[in-house]
Amino acid sequence: MSYHFDFTAVLQYWPMFVQGIETTLLMSLWSTLAGFVMGVLCAMARSSGGPILKRCVGAYVEIIRNTPLIIQAYFFIFGLSSIGLTLSIMTAAILALVINITAYTCEIVRAGIESVPRSQREAGECLGLSPLQVYWHVILSPALERVYPALTSQFILLMLVTSLLSAVGTEDLFGIAGNIQALTFRNFEVFIVLWVLYLLMSWLVRMLFALASKLLFARKRKLGTPL
View 1 (tube, rainbow, N blue to C red):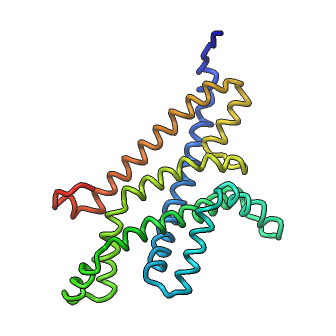
View 2 (cartoon, rainbow, N blue to C red):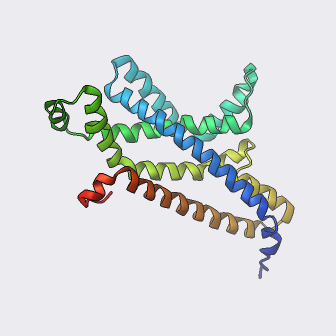
């Protein structure tokens, strides 16, 4: 059985692919920024907060990490609308991504914070640093350096799992690809193009994170130690 490839029929819809790429990157960008900030705050609360705060954050992390993203998205899009709180699909999708990535970021950053030796904290106090300076320069900054590779991998994975949200109506790259399939009936070609585009986006985002690491962690470059 032979199959005749026809990429021309698919590539003529390249503006739709570009639109899908823009939506995917936009969703990933806002989710990454908000999820990182909230994840760091949750990690600080879980490692240094009071007992009640630790339990609350811990319960949130366990609930989110042990339920599928698609169910969380359905909750924000369809569940909230049933009680009269209606959000746009894009807003609800980004909110679901933020809630999801925050839980994973929290655990990654918490592991980094707890890996900082207590002696290192005491050394900062002996130097006369304030509690805030100790936490920022001695605990949090080194912790973020240590877990940066894990964070970047998690954020790239976040970009890839945005494809799941096409099930709730987002017009991301995967959702747009479904529309192109319906127009061309060239399923195999569409998935090949989709595969290549996701690879290129992952490579681009990884390069941007690598560049950011050279700017954010210049101290390691001066010391000659690898990230």
